[in-house]
Length: 363
Image (tube, rainbow, N blue to C red; front, side):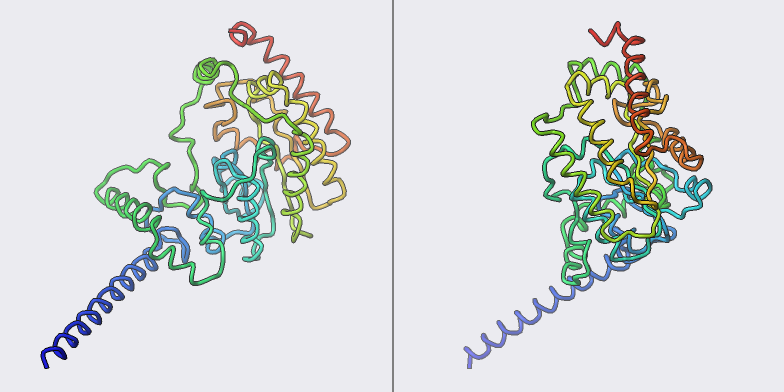
């Protein structure tokens, strides 16, 4: 009789423990579902959103209101979405990722096509990214980019949610409720502002120059072995990804305006000509596509002024605005007929920059 009582007590303890555990898991999952820190199920109207694009882009693709997707690296993060609406009559969502790789592009693009809402695509072609080794997507929350509901549990109960983004989100919202000002790099109320870093950045010629000199006048390192074949192969892969399902949609491709100091460094390191050859190759591959517009902003005169930069590649938001205005005016648009002229213009600008800054470039 005593044995049966012990058996009953153990069974009851197991059942109670199991019920409590399941109840806790259900409560945790429900809280994440309704609070939704990654905007995976809905876009919140009033709550502050943690400014972390790596976890938000999957939800934005599904839940934002858009007809245009802007995809790219940090070169796209300071675009103002209202300017696309005003100047280009587009309703955009920004799906940028700092240091975006080919694999990251493919992941984003695949989900974008599955959602099936995009009518226009604005894509930043970062030439250095075409010379990178394969990215294993370790920094992406890949479980958010599919329709497998079992993967939702990784969001509802996972480490990133409960130990990283959710506490930060709740904490920032609590601070805001107490009247504290939250820097835009930490949180935002607008999906248009996700990823922006301009307001917290420091710019200036002296800053860029001193950092360049501290780094031994060599900061834009690239692997030169088989660089052109490798970059062309990656360019083919990128273009095949973009145009695998786009037929009638407008596609805008652009080369971002790194500083003249970057291009000086590229010349010195021996890959400037390789980058320009690959640029021309991409333009030639797109020659027969009437729905494609390509802009070479690397020939902008703004690249000569280092006050526009915080380092040798990253520029002020005003440069992003200027690019949108130029797209609207169809300036700096390149094709197979004028692409050599734009490359020649860039080469001339670099020579001018080197003459004007000869004294410290040789330090």
